[in-house]
Image (cartoon, rainbow, N blue to C red; front, side, top):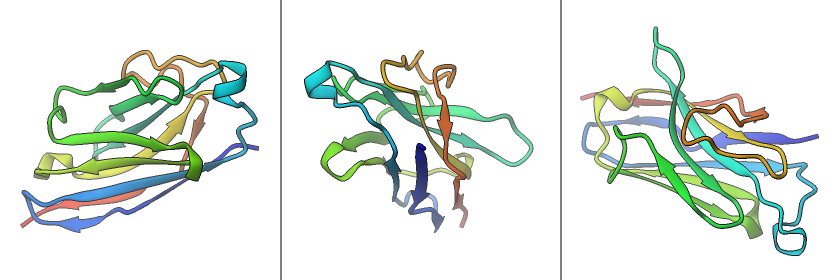
Length: 132
C-alpha cells in the first residue's frame, strides 16, 4: 500500500522560505535494476480555487517540470535513499498560500507536465500561509 506523508508547512512572511518534505512508502519498483521510474510531484490548492500543479519530477532521470508561477523560486528534488521528495520554496508570495499536496504515479507512470493527470496516489496535504 502506497502512502505519502507531507510535512514542513507553516506560516511565513512574504519573501521568506520554506522546505516541504514528502516521505513515501509502499513502492516496489527499483528504478536502477528494472529501468522503471515514476513521476512524483507537488500540487497546491488555495482557498476557493481549484488545485493546480506546482512541480513534478521523474524518479529515474530527475527531469523536472515547473508551473510558470514558481519557476526560479521553487526547486523540487528527490532523495531516493530516504524515500523523500522535497520542495524548496524561496521568495514566497501571498499567492503561494494554500494546501500543498504530494502525489505520485505508479511504476512507469508519466508526469504529463504539472497537470497531475498521471498521479495515482495523493497525500493529505500540508498548509502553507504567506502573510505579513
